[in-house]
Image (tube, rainbow, N blue to C red; front, side):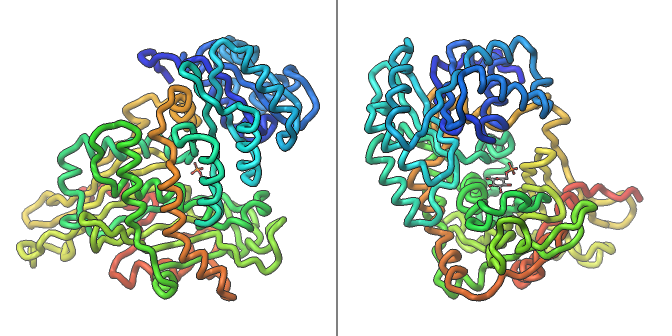
Length: 508
Ligand code: BG6
């Protein structure tokens, strides 16, 4: 990653609650190492880890070094970068439910010249409120004209509408919205950030971007991974809560938002918020009609025998938690009236494939009648491939060479990796840099979080009140049969991952 033209972030202490946990070693530290090497942060960044584990600075440094080495992450960076960062990592052993540790943190921050601090809550969600209360009680969240205090919260932000509202109210009781950085890691992905550029920097795309020309939109996030060792977390969560009101809705908001007046964070967050607030809130009956939930059965996956979801360690016997969900939603705005948004996500599926497929309306067909074997023109599609193989594909019809007018669909393919050296990004670089410089564009605002939960609440209520089990699907498939039926009864089909956007013209 070369970021020579971007100024390094201002001095800051990143205080990480949960410093010996997975998020810190797998994402936060590798990201900061990457940023150290590329000059996005310099020696004025300090990491202060907080954890229960006994030990001192050297304990945390050694533990992180061992992990970075054994996971081959360290090999991507120079020793010089690691050693510079290593010496800036500190550790306080302490219990964040008790007062003592906060006094220690306060003393440390007061000794800093900048006194800027970002508190990263890399802990279980049930502690978010308690930590913010304590930070506030100890005066740690008070900003001055020259120093900032920010809080970073990972998802899940609440487990339903009521709990999200309660958490927002509790936190906003102590700090202003400007100090809260709610992470949705999908917003750190390059292709997700590119959605706005693809739309608003290209008249060719944006001028067609409405119900006048678009038939429907599909947003899929398929994963090959199964629930594995995450049974404890996942069984109380399920595919809907885990992926929809956050990640998939962020993609949907980017696709459906109106052009913001500027690239100012609030202008963008206003427009995204309007989309999420315009999501149709279903009655129980409509929620049942427009949703499918699935749970994977036992079967082979990647050459291994995968037990059924309900047999996964730490999953309650007879669990009705879903590992797959498909929804048909509407954004009730002038631009999107009548355009269905089909969303689906699941574990243990055919492919790892996160994509947005925008299908345009058919052209009037008349003039092609009887002109060749191709009776049904393929509709134009724009496919935003979020991961893997980040890129953008435009499917159009062309005439195949020859005497007859024979139309064939072809795909104009752009793959990021073909044109750019995208290096080894963790996906958190832009999130952390923006946190340090105080740009909230890529973070979720309270109103959007609540609007997202409001739109999924009817499905949560429906399933909570139903003895029915999710439909089963085979590992390595694209979900239960009912998911295909959900879209096929509208005369449409799910886009097949990695098939259509690789279609090339047949050579005659
Ligand atoms: C997380 C979910 O937020 O996102 C996981 O909790 C999911 O269950 C993950 O696997 C998907 O993220 P990515 O970046 O791997 O697509």
